[in-house]
Length: 214
View 1 (spheres, helix red, strand yellow):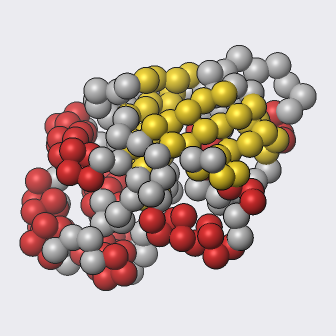
View 2 (cartoon, rainbow, N blue to C red; view 1 turned 180 degrees about the horizontal axis):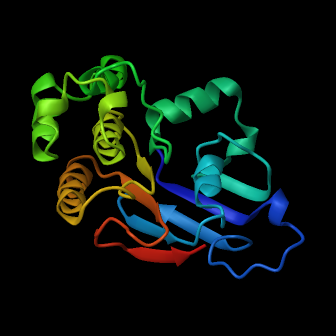
């Protein structure tokens, strides 16, 4: 169980010789389990990059990132696998859905591994998000906003200490964004995870504990 993520003087190697004003890069920042954080920045400032560092997907940075007191760069490949299985649930900006699988099949690919949600719970989430009628439709035939909702449900099938959401509502209307917030708030209350979400302007209307400018 992870209680915190700490970034100490972290900065991408590509930014190392640039003058940067940021509340995250080259700073000491701690994200705590159970709290919600919004990372705001314009395109190209490194929002996806920052999440990929936390997820131990990339390490082209200077500084230190710790899960509790453990530097993630000290972890073995096996430890990183465990980290991604137990600590993080990640909604990638590019979604990473399987285009030929249906919406429900994409969700079940994850849920069959974790057994975190019942079929009834998944169907209820799809219904609340207005895509229950798309459950048996290949995702390649869905709009990007519909695909974002499918990926969101899949993310919730991963038990975790922190949910990482990279621009999760870029193509979603305000009504569905609010529904996502309602679901996230319920899930956070049930499981106590932390939330880190990024935005270039249109963000989840959560009650954030802290908003940081990247």
